[in-house]
Image (cartoon, rainbow, N blue to C red; front, side, top):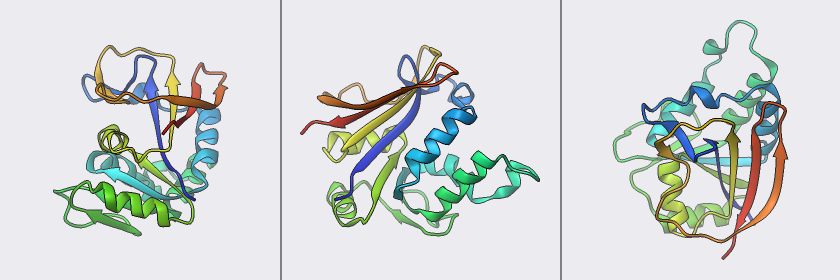
Length: 187
């Protein structure tokens, strides 16, 4: 059975973007990015909120990566393009990328069915949509890449009003100080 996995890069104090909406401090180096690729490789479907989709759709176009793209970045683009995408948005009329469909609102039952029927794991990206899925009890795993920086405020990786018991599945430390922790959400 497929799992619904929420993964994010966050500051040590728990933010995916700072108070100004910037996340340049979270750019993974080659070692971390290669590991992210390996974590994402088995994902068959990405579920995004509108803002995260707008950030991620850049992976559809090679142009921004330059004439000779970094092999790790090119690998991620290939992984991302191969997956189906579902964007939960009341304002997006048409998808800007292939293999993408729009859900006009968050529907826990429809997402539960999507995950149940998926042949591979499903990822949910973006802290706002992930918060809804976490509150609805849909998320099976949480993976956080904790960056060695504090930003003091902004957009939280996890919602303030969520209580969940977690079981550690894996952890990894990287040379640049990033730590990846992966937890199962206890039901």
